[in-house]
View 1 (cartoon, rainbow, N blue to C red):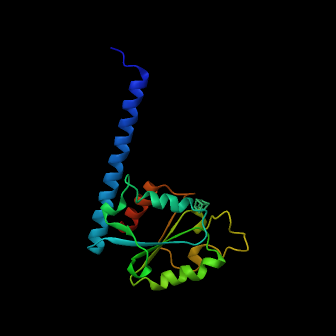
View 2: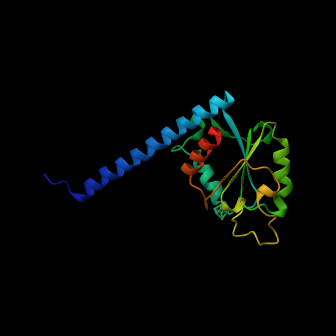
Length: 167
Ligand code: SF4
């Protein structure tokens, strides 16, 4: 019997979704293994927006939604830099946000790492010529990893973190 196309489409979509879900599970479990292997505990992340359009934050927020649910893999966003291991910075390094970014960095206990997320925080910001922008974050702080994209999608962020922990 020939299956009507709309029923076939429903099943194909579900299969793609399941495949994608499986990839998130696999990548998340790899990340969990690497983080626990290196730290012996969960990883705590402090995020500071140094002047973004908020799309990078939306992608980072997606990591906490029920689909990705990053916390089940041992990665948690925290409100205080004093509780953090790693500083995520999104957006251009604007004049107004320079001191808050440096304050957040200074309040993270050692050892600490900086990861920049999205093109704006890196060298290729489209706003780099603006009077309000102080240049890439790497001019001010030592950055262990930059994740490209405008914005980078959650899967890219997870796979970049896996490669960071394997360094
Ligand atoms: S990299 Fe793109 S998405 Fe991220 S803050 Fe800049 S313009 Fe927005």
